[in-house]
Length: 334
Image 1 (cartoon, rainbow, N blue to C red):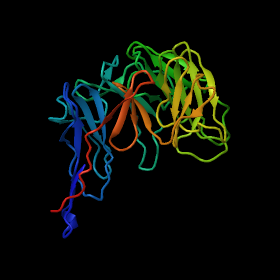
Image 2: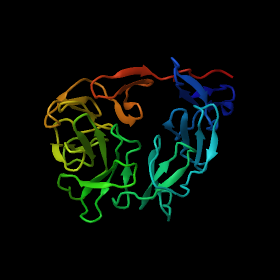
Image 3: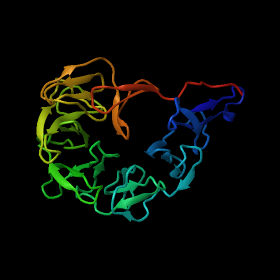
C-alpha cells in the first residue's frame, strides 16, 4: 500500500494498493498495479489475493460499503478484468491450479447473521470464475475445504458426518470426482461449547496430520485453540488421536497448519511459540520464541512471520527464506 497525505487538507489524502509478482527467472519481486480503488488513509482494506498458478490470480474485494467485486489476471498483474463473484454453472473436477472456496446458498443471511448453508465452489485458473463442484463430499451444511491440494494431489474437506453427527473429513485423489469419508476420534463434546471449528490437514512424507480447532475446557482463553492433533498412517482412512489439549500443557493453539516432517517429526506453531514433536505428536517441546502463520501453497508450506519475511518448506525440515517486495514507503507530502 502506498499512501499520499496532505496535512493542510487531509481529505485529499489517498492510498493506492499494489501487488507483488515474481516472474519466472526473475531475481526480485516487482510491484504492479492493483484494480482496487484508491481509498482514504483512514479506511481499512478487506481484499484478498488468491494465486491460481503461474501468472494467474484473483483479487476479491470484501465489499464493506461497496458491492463485492472480483478481478482476474492471466499475465502476472500487468492487466486485470472484472469477473462475476457468484458461481456460474458446475464443474465435474478440480483442475490443476484451481482453488476451493465456499459460497452461501439462498436465502442469504442478513448483515449480522451467519450463513446457514454453503456449497463448495472451484475458482478456475482459466478465467477466475467460480463454479460449483458437481459431486461434493457429504459433510453437512457447512463444509470447510482446504484451499489447495496437498503435495500428493489430495484435496481435503472437513465438516460433520450427516449420518452419525460426528466430526469427519473427506478426501479426494481424483480431482474431486469422488470422495472418501473418514471419521475423527474426536474428544468428548463440551457442554455448551461447539464441538468443531475446523480441521487443518497437512500431508507429510510418511503420515497425515489433522489439527482439530475448537473451544478448550479450562485454562487461559486463546484465539486459535487446538483441541486435538490426529495422525493417520494410511493416507487418512483411519486416525489416531495423538494429542488432546488440556488446560495447561502446550501446545494449546495452532496458527494455520501443522508442519509434518519425516520419521514422526511434526511441528505445531502456536500463538506464542512453535512446539516440536519427534514421536508423531505424543509429546512436544518448545522450539523457540516468536510465532508464525503456516499455510499450504503451490510451492510448499509457507511460513509467514514478521512483516515481509517468509519461508517455504517441502519436507518440513529445511526452510528457504525470502523477503517479499513490500517496502515501507511511509506517507509523503502533497
